[in-house]
Image 1 (cartoon, rainbow, N blue to C red):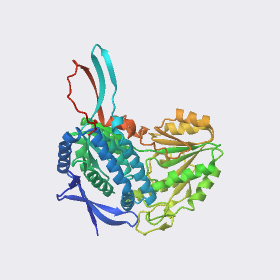
Image 2: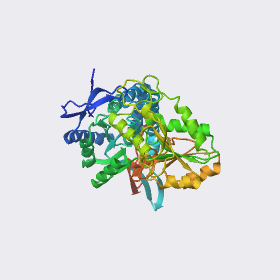
Image 3: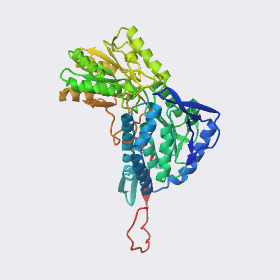
Image 4: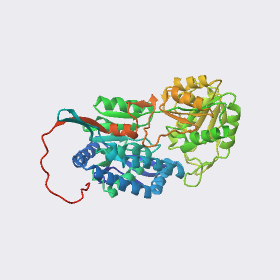
Length: 497
């Protein structure tokens, strides 16, 4: 039976009739499994009005109450994470273990947000002048918008909305129309956890919905993750309409392998970080920089491991699933063809992989290039697919320059047994997230996620304390009081409510 996904507004599914819809696919079969409603600006107006009405109450909710709702949501999400992972696999295509890992990493941000009473503590200075005290507080923004990508339909929104809600804001999420069901599932968990209606709304759609969110006068901030051209558009449009914007863009993550590295560890890492989620990760390793003389041995180890990988239906035990759509699959395949034409050595061609799944699925197997140069499109562009390019360099200095000269500055990794070299690299590399013998250096929730250069528009990263500050405004109060009045008698133990 074909499913129908619609908006979630004011604590319930939208009851209107949409003029436009999008198809939802199962990437492993290539079949349409349902439709999703596309919002007009009028629908976005309904969601914003619902959010504004809810904000009046939610911003006044005590920190104790907010934390109680967060804890309840955390327990529900943890109890139903396998169900959510299955929803993700059915619409995105990533294997079940990867989908479950995505939910688990999102849970970390929820758990961090459960500590909101501590995170929102301000400073206090007594008697800065005679009888005068000064203290700082942080207050919510109001209606905040989140525009999330297809590759992490659960985790990426959870980078933002737990802290936004915990801080007293109300949220409107615009998920990717390619895999929209996960966000609606999360919305129902929020309701079950006791979150007031209107605090968490979901509006589906395409560019029309995005633009309605970016330009609406009552939306105070926008959080976005996606490709750099769209991130730039979101940032410029949102800020032009007076909004606070954090827009995380594209990436070309380099993994530098020094001659003293453990090559078995490096080969395993290259496989995991290059082909996990079919390379559809903003933190995927797509450029492997081999400092000679390790390239031949490293490539041989990677090729050996690639031969053992299975590509197929993510629900049936395959190592790697399909790409999210036929259009995206064809785009990635075109980069493989371009790499050949530009003179790179095609070591493993994912276009000829034998797949364990329906022939109509959106398949492209793990692909490996050697002798890639900095001028080739497979190096300069973010491919967002299972394509790993090996660039050979002679020295550490050449490797560092290659990374620092690239347009993107999202994530990087270095593999070495030399602590001095690793420390030097973390200091000198111009990238926002660095891994040392760790191929995918996604920070824990209490640190912040984000890159440099064309990988970030705005100056605030996701989650951690930067996330708390993004979703709040600081205020400083200077006060002078006469002696306090007597408060009456109450022998009961004081309680937080």
